[in-house]
Image 1 (cartoon, rainbow, N blue to C red):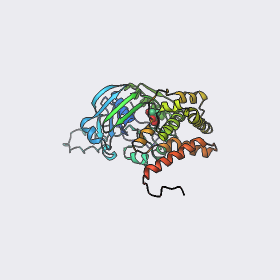
Image 2: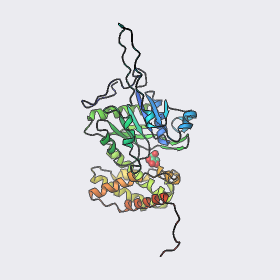
Image 3: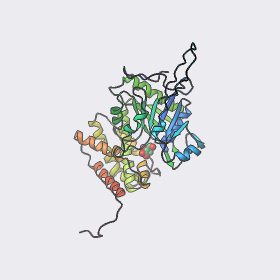
Amino acid sequence: MPTHLSPPGTVPPSPTTAAANQEKEFNIALLGAGGVGTIAALVLEKSGRARVTAILRSSYAVVSEKGWAIESVDHGVLGSWRCERVVQTIEEAVFPEPQPSPPIPTGAPTPMEAARERYDYIVLCTKQLPEKYNLAEMIAPLVTPGLTAIVLIQNGLNIQDPFIKAFPSNVTMSAVSMIGSFAEPPNVVKHIGPDILQIGPHYHAGVPDVVSLEKTKTFVQMYSEGGAKSCEFVDDMPKARWSKLLWNGTYNSICALVEVHVGDVQSSGAKEGLVLPIMRELQAVAKEDGVLLEDEVVQFMAERSPRSSRWQPSMLLDKVHGRPMEFEVILGAPIRRGRELGVPTPVMSTVYELLKLVRWKVENPGEDGEPHIG
Ligand SMILES: CC(C)(CO)[C@@H](O)C(=O)[O-]
């Protein structure tokens, strides 16, 4: 199967991997092997079509020695699972140049030079924290122009833009994930809610639509074959992302701010007082942005989790563990888009300002000063 279809002038040498004749067709680099990313690595390898290189930082030593201990609602219990390759840095993930072949005797047939291995897909499952790091810049050494497709399994609005700008001849696709999975460092992954994804291409001028479509459908097929509960191709990715934002922009933000579970928001009246007003603001900004989120979609997202749910959204987990919260792409981005389009977002902006205050306090924990008001 062809692994590249690119605009003229950008086609890299073929084959894409030194082992192109092997059964596994695709080289995949994966960054962000937490709860979501480790399950993605497992699914991709279970498909039998991919060799996954996971780039790990803090958990590298433990995972390379013992593997991951996974308890998964979709895949069962795996005491020690490792993907094909684990490395510690992006530089190590880059495939080495093939060794030059030894001189051959005169008259012998010239052997084919081995091609350098390349990545067909890069899957990003990290937090989206554009205020802290530039992911597009970080992954550049792994990207072959016109070949490597970028897959963003991440939260947030318009997260694809920096990648399309940095890699204008590459396919970029993204996934909205409704998986319930979390990591207990260094190597335990608890996957308690089924892996349900929607994946679609972000069409752009640098790549023919037919190419974006083909690479995305191939990825969706591979992910489905790997045993995900549900992996659906969606053609209208902007709408899918805005729809997911209805959930992340409300439940993630509110749960993180006041440290409650999703079910508490349902039971306490905060759904009516905060969730639905924010969802209506998101719906209004999306509409001006050309995306129609029907009332039924809003209602579905508002009711999605039951009152009994003890689920802790990722932003809450980040807050309680003192990690950076990804509210810039979840709330900041739609607020800024609303401002550009002249749509007021007073409730969302208040929650956003409160989250900024929380972030400031985490970054400035000092107790200096006088304990009086004046
Ligand atoms: C919705 C969600 C639980 C899916 O994993 C996730 O986006 C989260 O918590 O941020």
